[in-house]
Image (cartoon, rainbow, N blue to C red; front, side):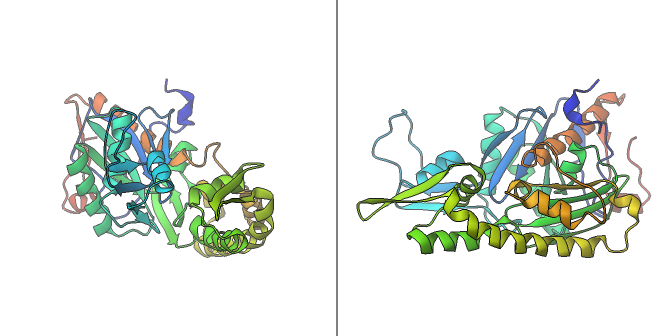
Length: 363
């Protein structure tokens, strides 16, 4: 019996969620290590057991080697929390956030993936990851090739909200994933893709207004990571040294501006989601979930539930930030188990073009 973190969704039928697209990697063998990898615009989440999730900022910093190293090592590339710290304390540092609005902009994306795999000691992985619902076939194919080439692993790519739906045991339903760079909406029935949308209305749009408010108030700029802590941690305060003095802003000081901006932001997202849902059968929205870091910001989940109260009950996973990565792991794990049950030890799954040609994969 699988442990309870599978949330009743095991084994799934994961390879139907993009119509007419290539999903598989060639062959899946029983000695592959399943990995769930969710590289977000703001944070990267990765798990190799479906329970313990490594989370770190999606930041890569390239800088000059320091004159001294108190840890006995020298380097010029910093990743995750170390990069975030370096950014705030060193000059002559090139700072990269490899993703913007759900798109991969720089090959340092690979550094984030390598960092996580090295931390988890994964060498021969079957990596399941996600991209925005409206990402192109070309984008997905290019990303798959790059990841497989650089990581020495096989890769599956899903529409992002599928991870949370697998985590919550939803084979039919709707999921709204509010990330930092985008908000994705996905509708599936029996794990078949029906429709979806990607909107450039992520947490970054909300933070842009708040960052301006902080800069106007005390004359400093703060990172998205600092803004998240400021909004979600009671009594939290952010400060800098300016002109020989400490200047700071507290959560209590920024909340009035936040409450004004967040209501309009949620309304805009909800309006777009309702357009996607228009005309759908009511049975499809009986399972309706909201996920992602944006759903954890103060008041967002409550406002979203109220906006959709006439349609149905909106649920949220117990770990919205980690749900996609764990769900991706579940999907990868299901293929490894399928391979283990094959007499040959292999499980081959063909893409849509193969099916059109009348070729059949192993069952």
